[in-house]
Image 1: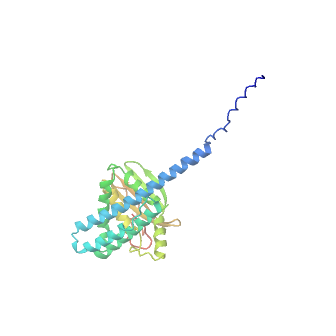
Image 2 (image 1 turned 120 degrees about the vertical axis):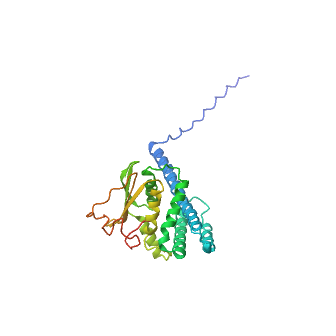
Image 3 (image 1 turned 90 degrees about the vertical axis):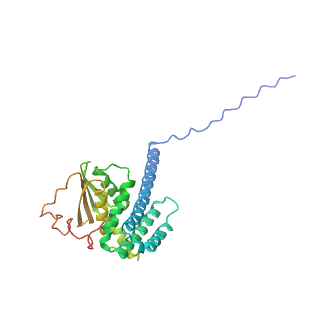
Amino acid sequence: MTESPHAAPPEPAVHPPADKPTAKSADKSADESADADAAAARSALWRRRLFEGEAGLTRFVVETRAGAHMRALLEVKQAIFESLPDNNDEQEWKAAFFRGQALMERFVVHHFGHPELAAWARSNGIIYAAVDPAPKHDARVPLDRLAAQADLYDSDTEWLAHDPEHATLRIRRCAIWEYRERARRRGVPITLRAPCEYCVPATTAMVTIKGLNARHQLTEDACGHGCVWTASRGPAAPEAPDSPNGPDSPNGPGSPVHGPRNGREG
C-alpha cells in the first residue's frame, strides 16, 4: 500500500501593516482637540456671563428694595430661562446671552432709568468677584477676562502691558459693535444706543472690585470703534492734555458713554 504524502502546512496569513500616524495627521488631531477645548471654554464663558448678569440683576433689585417690580423681574427671568440651550453649543449660548442681556438692559432702563445701569453693572461685578477664583490685586486678572470677552466676538485686541502691577489692553476693533448693529437691523429690540453704556461701568467694576485702579479711553478710527483699558495697583498716569485720547478729547475717559460713537459690551 502506497503511503500518502503529508499535506503541506497552510501558509501563514499576511496582514498589511497598520498605518502609522503621520506627523500631519497627529497635528490635525491636536488642532481639532485644541479647537474643541477652545469652543468649550467660550461656551462656558457665555454661560458664566449670563449667570453673573442675572444674579447681579436680582442683587441689584433686592438692594434697591424695588418690590414693586418683582413681577416684571420674574417675567424677565422666565424669558431668559425658558430659552436656555439644552446643550453646550457655543453659538446657541452666545444667542442666549445676547437675548438675556438685551432683556435685562431694557428692564433696568425702563424701571429704574438709564443712570442705574452703573449700579446694576457694579452688582454684576460683585457676583463676578464672588465666583472668580483668581486673586485680587493682580492687574492682569480683570483684563484677561475683558480680553476673553472681546475674543468671543472676534474683536481685534492687543496687549500693551501685561504685568501684575500694570496691565493695558487695547481693543482696536470692537466686534460687539458690529454684532449689535447687525441685530438691530434685523429688528432685534436693543435699548442702548451704544454697548459701552453698559460696558464702561461693568469693566470698571470688574477692575475695581479686584482692588485695582481702572482707566479707559474710547477710540474710533479707520479700524472702527474700540477702547483702551488700564488696570493698575497704583493710580494710572493721566493722559497728556493734547493727547488725541486725553481727558479733554471727545474720545477721552471723561466723554459721555452714551453717544453713537462709543462702544463695548460687558
